[in-house]
Length: 269
Ligand code: HPA
Figure 1 (cartoon, rainbow, N blue to C red):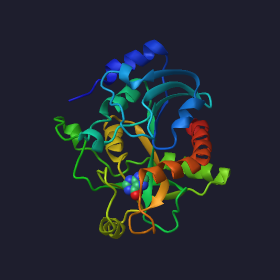
Figure 2 (cartoon, protein in one colour):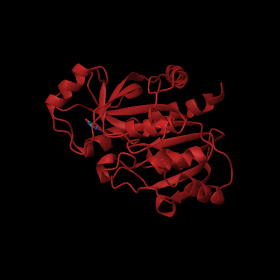
Figure 3 (cartoon, rainbow, N blue to C red):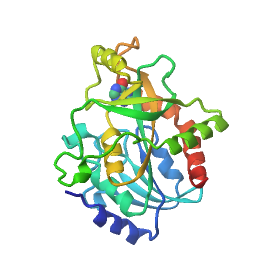
């Protein structure tokens, strides 16, 4: 079972020939980083084979190939989520495309709810590990033995060290913790948030986990950063909303961009 990665990569290569080093998946609030890519070619997802177009208002729908800090990158500005159509492998073709274009590393970003007092809204959190609470898996239906994928070091330790070192240099308070995937699109209940705390999660969200599984399956190194946009349900006085997710994500965007630029510069060190 495979998607249309080869076809889509050929379309990107025809628009901008080259080999790429790093894939960046931009979640809520980070879309403006795509505008900072230099020597860029932008390809709308509608022109790529098998690319899902996100229905989420804070997500764009284009692939941007170019350079960032002198490194060849492919940016996926906007992602699709399981909850949009019910396919856990909805990001398979986009990730295959990154792989086919030569990206050996992928940095995934998202917005997430915090389960820890110390991780206040606006804080970036490096993901150290995840809990897949959805019961879903993008590799279901895969037939090769590769489906029995080792996930014991899914979030690359070396990449995490680089991000932590860069955050320190930049004076950015970067949390680190476990991300728990809920399918969404409704937010969690307070009881579910208490359960997530008991089970060892630090943040909850509706994306990224299936992408990490797919990226590891494809043999890419993975790093992932959440922007904490709210406290989990029941941990804050007011109701949760996507409007809050979008607005708070924007407050953290400058720090996150600095962190990502530094990370890109450090890629070879
Ligand atoms: N829960 C799930 N996903 C989220 C949240 C949340 O509280 N905040 C931002 N994305």
